[in-house]
Amino acid sequence: MIESLLVANRGEIACRVIRTARRLGTRTIAVYSEADKGLPHMTEADDAVPIGPARAAESYGNAAALLAAAQSAGAQAVHPGYGFLSENHEFARQVLSAGLTWVGPQPEVIELMGDKINARNAAQQAGFPVAPGSTKPVPGPEAAAKIASGIGYPVMLKAAAGGGGMGMAAVNDETGLRDQFPRIQAFAMRTFGRGDVLVERFYPRARHVEIQILGLADGRVVALGERDCSVQRRNQKLAEETPSPGISEGLRERMTSAAVRLGEMVGYRNAGTVECLVSGMDFAFLEMNTRLQVEHTITEQVFGIDLVEQQLRIASGLPPSVDIDALRPHGHAIELRVNAEDPVRFLPGPGEITQWSPPGGPGVRVDAGYRAGNTVTSFYDSLLAKVIVHGDDRADALGKAAAAAAGFRIAGPRNNLAFFTELLATPEFISGGYDTGIVSRMRQRTS
Image 1: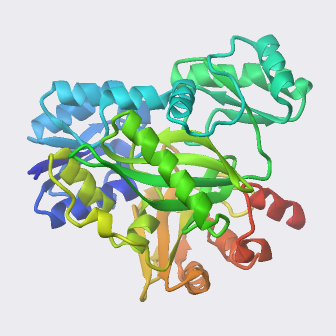
Image 2: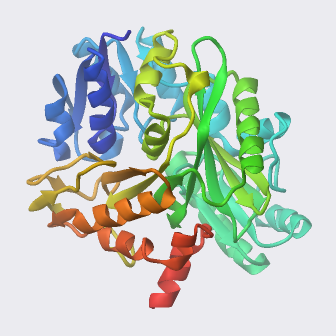
């Protein structure tokens, strides 16, 4: 097992990784920027190393600073968490070249699946259904309009190197396409260093469902159920649940089999997620996330497994700590992403936390990156904490989620807890018959 681990991240996910690593007897090393002095991930680790200014590009996104921190602190391995450099194949290669263990999939797999066009083509090769669209970068609006006329509107424009719901725009006609294409292309170049754009058929009333996979040290790829991530604002997730209330057992089996086939074809190792769009009884490949997902927690709750522990074991060349083949899901789990943002327009709300009183009780888990006295800045993602509930069934989980959202007390920065109270009382969500447009429809009803 890995003896010393540098967690190349911050906040909630850094605390999450540190908690498991320390339980396993692994020495943990945190990193922090000038803006993050005093955050819990610093104090929970065995050591903490400063890595630079507040700007992410100069700290958590600075590969040289992270590698220097790992070497100076005597780290044996690096866990990237999610976001920042977690899906950066060059960083993964640099970690390995430095003689360290990378807690994640192989750099070549990250590179392949990190490009939406290459990933889409790989999925198709593995027999995974894909939405009609381009198979190579689209050079400009003229070519995009030609493709769109062939597959039919609406279409989605996507930055090929994008991730996290960024660099995407749905358009309903050619006018919208010609308006949005240069914007997406410019955003992609500015944000990801590449202006490649793909065009794909857009399904406006679809669900966003993902499959958790594990590529084991022995070469096998297994799946651990699905998560429904359809509650989104601006293509970014707000709440997730498992199992998905909107898919049948037959559809679940088809999606799981396709995800495992894709993982096997690319020789996947460690934890990863295959994301799909689901419309009726049909599903299509969306992307593969070559890292631990924010919402991995609900899979842990229903399967009774620690996914970070399995990541560390796989990276160490060890078998899982449990009999993977014998695992079966139990009950229902829901995650609420508590963000420092207003609950109506979802605009950032930084500030000092003057009150922090998370909920508790049976079946309630809170993974947090802040506490009272900390300051939420505008430099990073707005995630404050994740409220995770587990119930005997969906009705039980819904009740626990509503009570937890109502009982969480945060003062100082604006937060979206009121949104979750609203969501959990919305008939469309309660029924389970929602899709990715649910938040937009909720806002239309209240405007």
